[in-house]
Amino acid sequence: MEKRDLNWSEIGFAYRETNQRYVSNFIDGAWDEGGLTSDATVVLNECAGILQYCQEVFEGLKAYTTVNGDIVTFRPDLNAERMMDSAKRMEMPPFPKERFLEAVEQVVKANADWVPPYGSGASLYIRPYMFASTPVIGVKPADGYQFRVFCTPVGPYFKGGAKPLTICVSDFDRAAPHGTGHIKAGLNYAMSLHAHVTAHAQGFDENMFLDPGTRTYVEETGGANFLFVTKDNEIVTPKSDSILPSITRRSMLYVAEHYLGMKVTQRQVRLDEVKDFAECGLCGTAAVISPVGKVVDHGKEICFPSGMDAMGPVIQKLYDTLTGIQLGTVEAPEGWIHKIC
Image 1 (tube, one colour):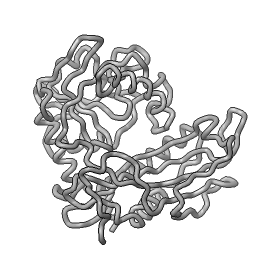
Image 2 (cartoon, rainbow, N blue to C red):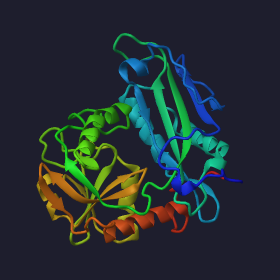
Image 3 (cartoon, one colour):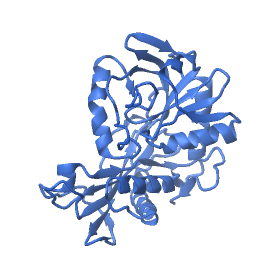
Image 4 (cartoon, rainbow, N blue to C red):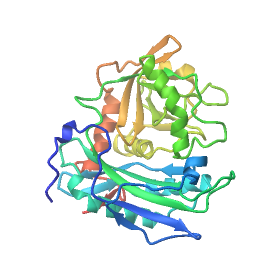
């Protein structure tokens, strides 16, 4: 298929309207048949539940062109399952897993000319989301919902290579104890925006949020999970009930253990032990893994031995192996790669 005539390396990580998107409505207690539409506009009543009480959940995944020319997605079944879990927590009707996968496939096929070519460093970002669409004025779940999937091409997250980030220990809490930090709902991201803007205004790239109960343990950033590397090459990731279960992190840990032969541990990570790690990274769909060179705790600098010039050697291996799996240059574990066309 002929690709769009774009300078793929320069398009950036931003929204571009594509050909088709998928829409299905939950009406009278059931999801309708759903289907593709060329209309990118969402029309809502002024009293729709999403506008009044923020009933909304979403996902993010990517489609890639592999080394042999196939268009594939990476572990979309896990996105479907996580979205179902998020919906249940928000008292929304889960969109069935098989229908989720079918919707993603339809959208990618319908926009195949927007999937960047292999070797461009770009990908097709896919955004499934669901929201309360019918009017509700009392504080309660809405009766009707809309599930949608759109996609947009995005360029390489790191232009010119990944430069280590400088992050700060935040004075704000990302999530409440026993709250919604473990689900992918828009309200969690809205809560992190002020902290994110504040950090940027102070010259930092991101925040390190601590546990909301004791402010002793490392949790995550506004949109990514932490991954640490010890000086004897053990991978350590924070464990908490208020951390979003990242699919990228889960995949990284498998790669570390089964491809690179490393020891992997998920446990609580104290802020006062961060200084003892050799490398640090932020895991997420957008960048896969972003290296962290420095953490600043209210003026006290914690500098990782991996430095501020490039990814540390272990994080680089993890990045290269996982992106190799996604692009077809490294053999994937069974079930990880879903071929679209």
